[in-house]
Amino acid sequence: MDDLPDEIWTEIFRRLPKRLRCKCRCVSKRWSNLISKYSARLNDLGFILGEQAPKRDFSTEVSEEKCLASFFRFDEKGGFTADDRRFFFPTGDLELEPDSLCSCSGLLFFRANNLELGSRNRVVYHVANPVAKRTMVFASYTPNHGYEYFGYGIVPAAAAECSDETCWRLVALYYYFRNGAGGEDAGISSPNHGLLLTIFDSTVGQWIETKEARFSENDDKTTWKSEFTRLDAPALYMNGTLHWLESSSVNTLCLKTLLFRRIALPTNRGINTAGRRALLWESDGRLKYGQIRGTEGFCIWVLEGAGTSLHPRWRKTWHVPIDTLKSKADALGLFFADNIIDACYFVEDLHTVYILMERNRVLLSYDILEETMREMPLPEKISDLAIAWKPRRKKQLKCGAFTMSRALVPWNFNARAKLPNLVGILRPTTESLFL
Amino acid sequence: MSESTEKKMVRLRSSDGEVFEVEESVAKVAKTLQDMLEEDCADAVIPITCVRAPILTKVIDYCKDQVMISSSSSTTNNPNERTEQERKAWGQKFMEGVDSSTLCELLVASNFLNIEGLLNLGVDKMVSMIQGKYPQEIRDMFNVVNDFTPEEEEEIRNQNAWAFERDPYYKKRSSSK
Image 1 (cartoon, rainbow over the protein chains, first blue to last red):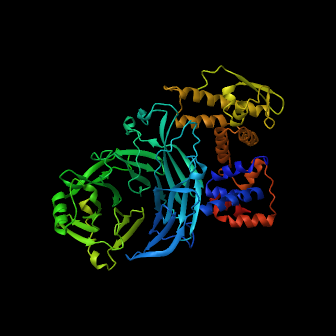
Image 2: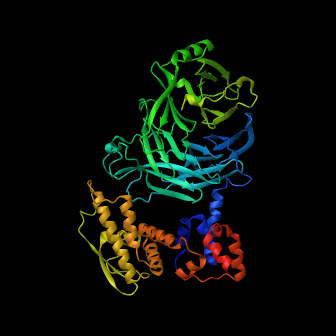
Image 3: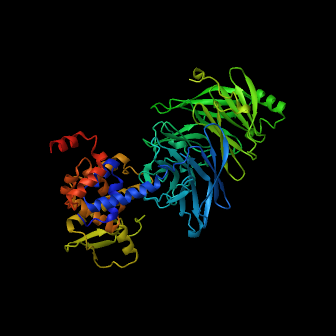
């Protein structure tokens, strides 16, 4: 029995549930030591725990040149304060991939290439805790798949919050194909191509092979092409499912069942429409999708039947007329044109839709009942392009700016906070409007 | 992939002297052997010093199956390719009736020969064997010597008391002591 090497034992303990692992500590000294060692590594990964756990509302700024990140802090009362704490990531020969930046539970995740190693397989992931001022590096998923070539083409990564706040998970998407097989048009249904999702679980300390993400039976596998795009926005975690937007679909991955679904968008968004803003967000526990459509204005759809065995479908709820948008823009002297629709970001909250004119740094709110639109200036600290935002809780609206240096600077609006220029954003709930 | 090459045979000798002749493709499932074969240092019999004949038979069975799968799925039409469920069922069947000492030898062998799939199967089996057992039962099963002093055992048990809590079976036992 004792001739089993340590690494095999560790592998066995890794696959045991926590309770059983603790029981096994009572077996012998060797077992106890091995499990302690393993647990220590887990604690290291889960360093979100304890007093030094970061607040949830941390944002990050990563400068590409210096690998410097600074963190800003936002308190629940709606205050906006830049945190004086600055945090340096190890520089060395690491090349950050800013597109991979994401965060959850106050932790920051990103991917970096180790240029020194010269191989594109040398991709490492970082997780940083801004409060504890610690980073941790873990290797990217190493394929153990029997496939000869493993494409690292597109790897959107998203941190998914767990119900248990002491752990985090990172999901990475890989597109793989066998060498010389089929070409890019073969689609996902070909046995030589596939989509693989791997999850890094901090409670396990390793990438979990989810095998191949399963497709629901209703999915039309043949339409799948290798049209992977970058994540436009951080993936959305809702009801145990991760959602992210692709060029023509919303992809969902249930982290529990590992069921992968691809839900076609209600309207054609087009593939080469980099400037065409479309937004995915959550409100009232439902997935919403918004996009400017033709002369209609900004339309909002809600996804129905998600999480059931039925194939989910989009239902159009309501829209902000394009005329109202235009006339308000004109009145304020703002830049707005329906053919340059990337001038806006949208978000909806109860019966109010918030429209951010990114180039003009003005927040508009449109009341669906009164059909009125009002404007609110944003904090002056935001002085750069491209503002994105997302609501989280029902009573809380969060927005932020992606600056030129790819910094994400969010801030909060809170109905209870006394922010004179933002008073009245939230109104009594009229949920029936949307349900 | 290997269809173009002629079927070359490889001979393996287990620790108790038995010689097995297998196709090269089968041997190559084991990464350790693959490396040896690629370096051309294996024209004679390859001695596998730490694996007994019955274990080696089992390992070869596994490798043969892997070759069968991969050869069928490398062609474009692959009716033989298994679904996830079938693979699981096959793995379970393969490990059925394997006792703990055989399992350990299998694990050592697959570790030595570097056969990831088999190692995974073995570890899964191990986990399923440990599940639902008490420390003493685990010791008995794997012949692990309890090297804790009674005091130490008491202490470590207290430290991990939560793992035994909420386990009505355990409570019954400890209260009847």
